[in-house]
Amino acid sequence: MTVAEPLHRPSTPSMSTADHYHPPLGPDGSPFAFYEAMRDEAETTPIGWSESYGGHWIVAGYDATVEIMQNGESFSNKAVTFPRYGTGEIELMLVAQDEPVHKKYRQLVAAPFSPAKTAEFSAQLAATMNSLIDEKIGDGRADLATWIAEEIPARLTAIILGLPPTEGDKYRGWVQAVSKYFVTEPERAAVAFEDMLSHAAALIEERRSNPGNDVMSIVTQAEVDGERLSDADLVGFFTVLLIAGIETASRLLGTALWRLAWDIDLRRRLIANPALVPTAIDEFTRYYSPALLGRLVTERVVVGDVTMEPGEVAMLWLPVANRDRRAFPYPDALVPDRVPNRHLGLGHGIHRCLGAHLVRVQGRVVVSEFLNRIPEFELDRDRKPQWSAGQVSGFSSVPAVFPAGSPRGV
Image (cartoon, rainbow, N blue to C red; front, side, top):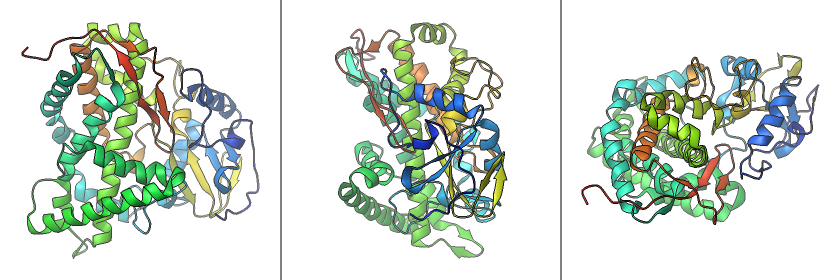
């Protein structure tokens, strides 16, 4: 990777070596202490230079992050994933597109992700949650990440895309191949990616002939500027909706359940006052922001006292910016009734996450139903939680124990 030599490289002990695929983990298995250290440095140096991946900018201050997000002329989404996800020539629709193209394509798929439409999934998600809980409640122990946090987003995303909702393991394997294994296990990634492409092609062909109400039916039948979308565009839609729908929500939900497993006061507060759950989900999203975003510098630009050159990449560390003391009172405290909450965990402005309302609905249903059925639980002292690092990060394994109960109706 060739990156232009910057004119100014402010560096700090954390930023100079920052690598989102290999962050230092603390005793609790998370990188949150590292995030706080970066935040402390960002108070004087909101933008630094990391030598990782050929060199790139680290943007950790809240104001600098917002400024870059709002400047679509100097910063392109072409580097939204960095290093670029292993999708070959396939462009990630929406997230990797700039205006005015982005707006055209976003309008095609906006309706299924509206607040009103996503609210319709609440009853279905609640039924699915209780079905999943019934399967393991009698065991008295389970991995909250693989049992609940990954399964709910996988099933919902499958329904939205028009896939069989019971094959969550397969979909998660595709997502991991594109977003993670391409860096750590490229041969494994290639096999899974080819399997995903084969399934995507078959789904696209089927929806062209027999459209339904799912998103892939919408885009296969849609026209932009009088023309149908190409196969490459359709696979790009399939890939980005799959990744965004599963990974971001899975990591957020897994980390939220990890927190609730040891934070007894927070858990009991939410049980006593269920009306707090929606604002708590927003606060989990601020405090445990799962995603980082990349931007490609397209022209010489000055942000703060830093000059960036065309061809350079700026990585926006949203979980650090969301702990900026100038933007959030008591940023290191998880405040379930924090209002207002201007966090950047789901993006900002025109590139705000298309599925933001879906994330909120899933979070509300998962937390509410889980606490209703299993109000007392804790981390399994014999098994350690596992952190999944990358451009989307969070706990991917949360072993927990709880009093064995009975399935509903038994």
